[in-house]
Length: 257
Image 1: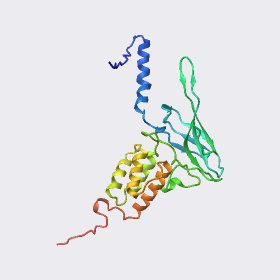
Image 2 (image 1 turned 90 degrees about the vertical axis):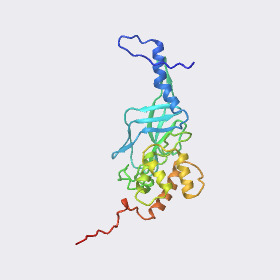
Image 3 (image 1 turned 45 degrees about the vertical axis):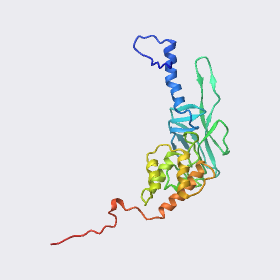
Image 4 (image 1 turned 60 degrees about the vertical axis):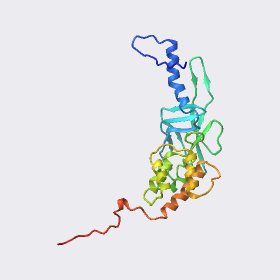
């Protein structure tokens, strides 16, 4: 028999060991089962903001090695121009344990080393010129890969089933630009899904790309997916703009009796 016990937290009730165990199981084990087959990566939130000398990561949830890290307060690091690529990394500290808690801490740091250790995750990368301002706003989909003075989040992993994937914000940006042009059924279906803003797996994105471009991708890494989405968007934009509601360029007529 598989028992399902829900703790009754009433006023003046004594919290017994069995009740506390039930609370622990509901609070922690449930989420572990929900994301059992998910890769490491961001699950929600964790957006980036910049000032002239600071990068701030907003609140959010990150999955790493099967454990959910709740970023309950914004995290900030200071930066300066180096005209070389710098990576902002999330660092998962070694586990600490005592008789009351298992403690897992996270920190952030900037590094010239673009390689990741087993306990590190990329949050962004950038190359900043002296006197320039590091920006998080993009002029269009292609601008996300601009080399200088721009926060690049293309390679940041988002948690999805089996393997990590590219940011849903990037995929939504693709759809927002593509929808103003004539789309075939394949493009239309993908854009409808992308506009939801939900995480789309690398498998789904690569399936669309391969069928759309009639190629076989060498891998499903974020950079590869982004570069091929750029090719598709260029192709879409080379077509004619969509006629909104079928009234664009319609000639206005006045009938006089």
